[in-house]
Image (cartoon, rainbow, N blue to C red; front, side):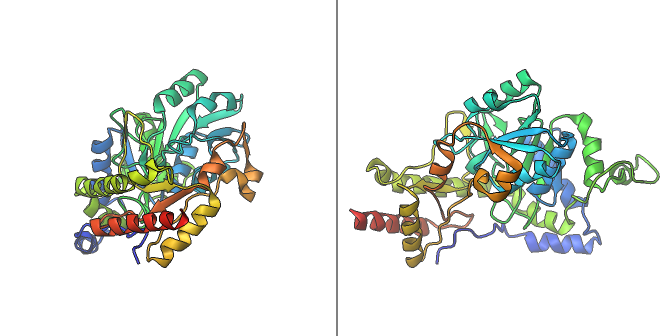
Length: 378
């Protein structure tokens, strides 16, 4: 069976975890956490990058830093993971969903402005598959209406928009290091802070509402509880696992992009025949090979194809059920405008195996199985 995903491992993970254990520092914010944070800051240009226990928690921190209050509204696509909405629902906000673009599966930037009300506080673009939303337009809308931009860049590390790293364009950016992502610490994430003035507040929130970070830097002689917060600090063991990949990040990125391009080349004839549609990467966007998906005719054809692939030893999966159709989505959110593409396109999309270590012969086999499926349908 060709797995859909294999968690990344670069080779030094066990050694670095052992080093962390040997240093008697496994609770977080040790040398490996600092190395990862510094690497992220240098890679993206963000003022501060803080590792978190998940991208979900990075989003929760962003909602706290943005001072989202009950009754506030936050605009986002319905085609996203539940964490994008949960972070703001927990603060009492109403989630306002708008339709997506069918080419990138990202929020349609031309529909955002009409969804803004006097209660709107933030826009949350989600960079699907590591392909950027139209951030120039989104940031322009935010400036004109005095709104915050909180990027859900869970899938976006090593991807960029017009030379700017995803997650480091808006006011806050949230990254995932879940085992399905290009770089992993099992469960984990990071929050990017654009404004240096927000760093101390973010550190306090992340350290259970204490000024512990300042204490360990020697800036104060004792630490205490100074504000509301939670425990968003990941284990040093997780950071050690992640560091092994970040130090060879370019190698991992190159591998994934090579896999992505092989899929594209092999499947282009099927697309030219009108049997499938391939991903779109707009001008100015540099993606990171996070996923390769195809779009088929409809939900029925996708279901048949998933079963066929499974029978041939290929594990392929679909992605999100649009949030506005879920019970919680109906309770905590509303869809502004017409759902022209969100549901239709989500039912057509199928993700193919993609991971660091996937071989050329395996990709060729997946393509061969796809051709057989469509040949049998003719």
